[in-house]
Amino acid sequence: MAAQLDVEDDYAGESDASAEHRPSDDPTGELYPELQQAYQFFNGKLFDGQLPYVLITLQRKHSSEAYWSPSRFSTVAGALTGELAMNPRYLAVRSPTEILSMLVHEQVHVWQTYFGKPGRRGYHNRQWADKMKEIGLYPSSTDMIGGDETGEHMGHYIIDGGPFETAAKQLLEGGFVFTWYDRFPARPIRPIGRSSDVPVAAPPAVAEPSAQTDKPSEENAVAVLAGPKAISEHAGSDQQQQSPLDTVKPEQATTISSLLARPKTVETPATMYPGLQLQMPQQTEQQQRNRHKFQCPNCKQSAWGKKTLAISCTPCQIPMGDVL
Image (cartoon, rainbow, N blue to C red; front, side):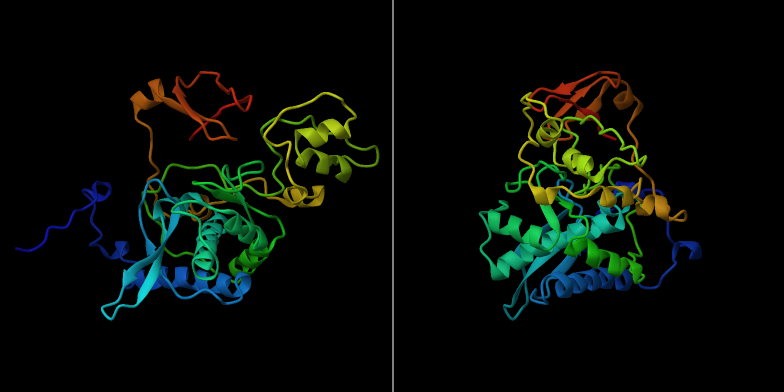
């Protein structure tokens, strides 16, 4: 009896038989070499070409944007290789630089598997965190300044002007692009942070502009970027402020010139390519009316309630934001 293959409900009632739905004779031969090209490019730029070839796949694991699984595949002769998987549901709602940073995040796991000492299953240890910083991605459990640097579930933010950002700019400015995107992506998510992002755990008072310029002085800007404690000390206040960002490290801050150079919006493939035929997921009418999700931008705790609800995170003492 022939095996039965499931067809995803997302595509029910659609057909790609017409000529306009077949823009390429080899989609696999276009997308997978692009992933391989990016892997090899960053291998050379950030890892001195040390990383071995691995099997890169696309996997829709709802709980993960990407993952690394050592020794996952075997040849009939007994050779082993690991799997580096990217979740295509997130590609269209992440900027190209963010997508590449997710790939490099997993490449650090590849490096640690072959040249370091990985933590227990699922744990991101100090060696992994130090390597992330070395190649220009700062480990963070919240994808922003102030998050834990090690733990079970870890993200990162991009260090402005670091090795990763420099290499990613070179790759993208050279014309690199992902050709194919999942038409049924995940719901839009908050962008991955940058080292120049002003911490949000305790919104700082904006420093007064100097008399010579309309822009904040660099001295004041660094104090703002260093977190609430630095702001208090800079202003000469004796008031003690308790915040998860009190221990922000100097390398997590940056200068005002870098902050002012940041684009105001993060472009994703969904906004960059007008011809990209995406079907963004929508909440049902019942969900919109009765169940709205709120999330603390710092510790990631979530709560559900009416959309008009004003809710704050007690441990972090900041308002919870909407989750789109």
